[in-house]
Length: 90
Image 1 (cartoon, helix red, strand yellow):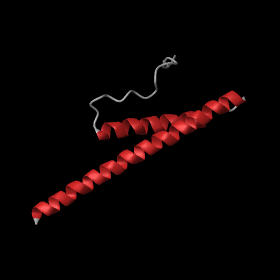
Image 2: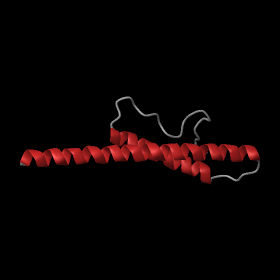
Image 3: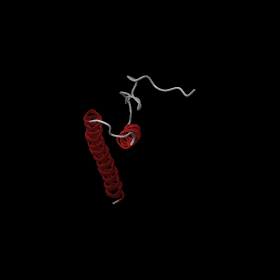
Image 4: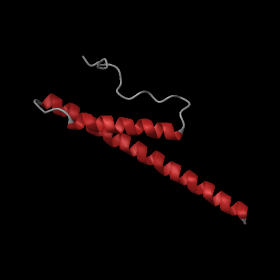
């Protein structure tokens, strides 16, 4: 018999307070994948299930935006480091 998680336990672990950007990106990626799985799985038998699915779609949109913003921040930080290195070489 396979073990399943209790209903109230999150599928994706919480983000530790001291997590770096890479760890947060990894956790967001896991959350995005889990949310996507929840959206695609199951059949809609009644309007209440459809409301839940729409809620997961909103969560997915929010997570994707946060993920994109962190990637953008990472790219900007890397670019700033490259510029600083080039300025030091001159």
